[in-house]
Length: 464
Image 1 (cartoon, helix red, strand yellow):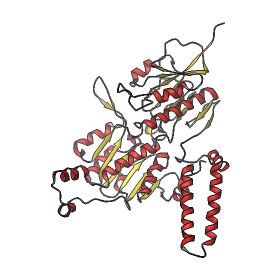
Image 2 (cartoon, one colour):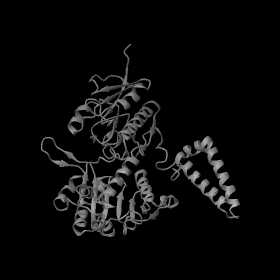
Image 3 (tube, helix red, strand yellow):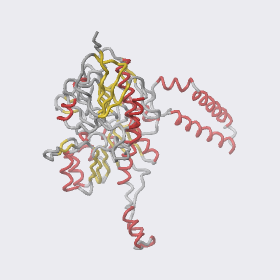
């Protein structure tokens, strides 16, 4: 009898390792070893063979690594005839016509590049297969790159210039230091637009530098934002008012059918820019479309915005050299504002090796969960019939799932918390007799409690 099953095929369409091997090539060996260590799974370099008969067998899963295929034409050819059952991708834009009937995972949070009709496009609204992402995997890497960008603009101490003059013996601290005034971040206002995983990590860094952090988010987040020591803003303009820096982390949102573009397109507009502090810094490491490039050009010209750092996708035709993608509207601004504008190719979230490997491993687990258990982990948009869902994020990033909270309380973490809280309660009762020993004990308990909560990942809101 003919065997009517075949291995399930998964296309890996992006790099899953950014460290380099002996030949100078990005090395996927860590993720490859992870895949090959799972029962029934195998890893292959290059595309799958053409022969494709029978139904997909969830017990046998073959991963095909094709990170250098990126153009629409290449992807349509690679995926012709429903060649693959599932997909793992990061930055590569997946055309609508490419089908993956069992599901897809985007390594990272935003799924705007996951255009397959199998799950209804980048918002996952429709289709026969679930769309998933890996939220939180690259949140800290992205937030730290945002902070690196901010630190290039504020404080504004010219390290290279000062080093050069010191090295050449042309700088005297007593005579020349006054020519290089700078400013500290402490006390300045940071506006964070969005309270997702990345926005919250950026806000935490702002608080670490003693900035005044104002966050715009949905009203349901207000209580949690305030418990974390941030200021809640009901509107974007309220958050941006007198801000010395603004960082946007909202995502594109659902499609606006009236305008024919995602709902958040151009959300950072002339009104928002006009209420910021004169000479403020604008950072967009989210989606290029979120900022109105025309309004930004006018704000740079007037000096209302002193520096803008944009990290957005950019695509260049090998045949014509034509530049397309979300970065394209910003390029004309360079002619007049090159000294005020820094443009990056959407590199902040995707070029950290440990982050990419961790994301790839999680994506593999998610694909196998869908294929073998019909469980969609971190589903985006609609969940097709026959699937159940659950969510995971790294400890300490984003909201805390109830099951994780309960698990911590039921294990040794819960016992440690009970012990510390008991000590804290005892010292608080003794505090009526104020003395140095009691005060020292109380402060020690408070610090230990905070450190333990950080170690257990008990930061931020509960997931509802």
